[in-house]
Length: 237
Image 1 (cartoon, rainbow, N blue to C red):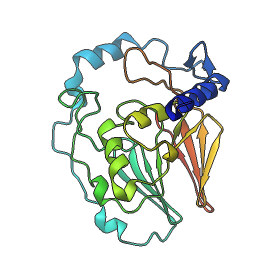
Image 2: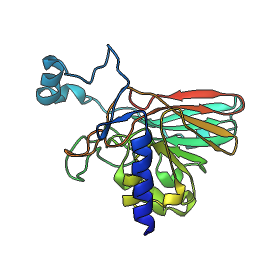
Image 3: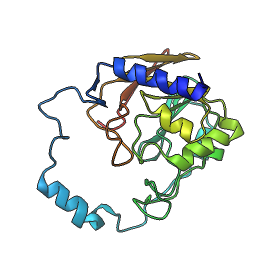
Image 4: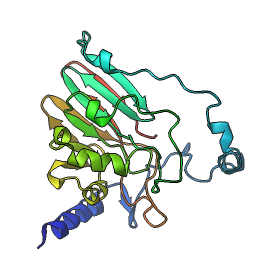
C-alpha cells in the first residue's frame, strides 16, 4: 500500500474509534450552555452588517520582543503574545509556539478575508529555537496555510515536532509538512518530548475550512506540563 493511502487509512481508523466521532463527524460533549446551536439574531446581524465595529479606529501599539528573548527566564516561565492565538511559551528551558499565524489574512484567499490589525511582532525567521509547535484546530485563524508551508521548508524549523488534534494532519501533509513531524491526538491522549508533556483536553467548538468539511477534524484545548509548571491553552472554547 502507498504511504499516503496507509496514512489516510490509519487516520480514518483513529477517527472512527474516537468517542467524539459520531455519524461521520466529530461532536462536542453535550452541554446545556453550548453556544454552537443557533447564534442569536443580534450576533448574526453584527457579524454581517456591523463589521466596522470590530476594526480598531487607531493604530495599535506594537512592541518587538527580540530584546526580551535574549534575557534569561528567571521564573522558568515566560509568555510572549504575537497576535490572536499565536503565543511563544518558554517553559523551563523549552519553547512552544501555539497556533502560528504569520500570514496577512485568516482566509483561504490571499486578497480577501479578515486582515490582521498590525504587523507580526517577529517573523518566523526571527524566533528563537523552538522545541514544539502546537495547533489547536483547523480554522483559518489558527491553522495558516502560508505559515505552515514556510514552517515546512525553513531549515531552522524543519525538524520541530507538530502536535495537533485528530485529523488535522491531513491539512498539514497537503501543505508540505513531513508526516514524521506530525503527532495527532484525541482528547485525553498525550505526547511527551524532552521533558514536556502535552495532553489534548476537551473543548466546546467546531472545525472546518470549507462548505463540505465541517467537523471532519477534531478541536482541542491543551495542557502543557513541564517539571515545574502547567499551562492551559484553550485554543477556542
